[in-house]
Amino acid sequence: MKYYTATSNGFRIKDFDLRHTIESAQPLTFHADYNLAEGTLEYAAGDKVIRAVCLGNSKECTVRLHSNDMAFAKKEFAKRFALNDDMERIYARISTDQFVVSAIERYHGMRVTMNDPWETTLCFIMSQYNNVKRIRLIIKRFVSEFGPEILDGDGKTVGKGFPSSGDLIGRTEADFRGCGAGFRAKYIKSAADYCTNNLDLYKLHNKSYDKIKEELMRISGVGDKVADCIALMGYGKMEAFPIDVWVKRTLEGVYFDGKKKKIGDLHRFAEERWRPYAGYAQQYIFHGARNM
DNA sequence: ACCCAGGCGGGCG
DNA sequence: CGCCCGCATGGG
Image (cartoon, rainbow, N blue to C red; front, side):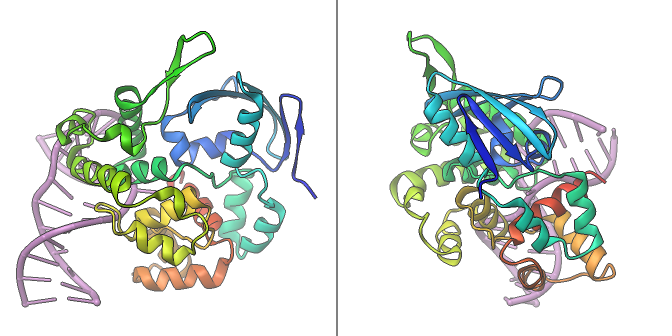
């Protein structure tokens, strides 16, 4: 049973909502350009620019892709937007109470995206003690300042790619501060060096959630919460349940009568309640909480 | 003007 | 261990 079908230049997809996915503050959405009125999206992936138009509704929609490498674009889009996720099964599992059910109703079709591990790492280091609007501003500056040029077939520049860790080697903390990274600049510098020379993020995919998190937390500037975000949105580890201020406040308010709980206790609660899709529950709780 | 933002590392008891 | 503090910067 497939939840989407490929067409010559795109997909027909069930239970997919581009808008809610883009607005839910995931790595791709920090640098992609999205036009709500037109339903259009443009983003860089690898050394390509991909454009997409989404028509229809969250139950059933059509995505038309534009790219000079359609095979790559289809593969990238399907992976990035988690088109293989069985949303009916996921919704059935995490619909444990009215709070989650109403969040699913409001944001039906929102996906937990699968992003490049380094892209995810940089984005979430940038997210600490920051707000979504400003994260977007800073990440876009990083792309335009440090990202490699993307060329079309005729050698003309059509955009900038997301800067790899190697692209940041040779840049200084001051360069990153110049983009508005602030006190996070030292973490970015350290992480770029570490991920270029000491830790290959692209060799962790087949490792366990625990092992991946342990490796990620060796990066300066990556703690428990950011590591969970990377495990979830960079490696697709659904047992990851990032607990930020929004999620913590919401869990305490909805499930613990407003009483303060320890992060560890909340992790155990979420794991028990929503496994193996705790990550999806988190994304709906987070997005729901932020929009109240 | 003042306050806060998808936390983290470091220092302290 | 747990707790508390400072941290750069742009927008409300």
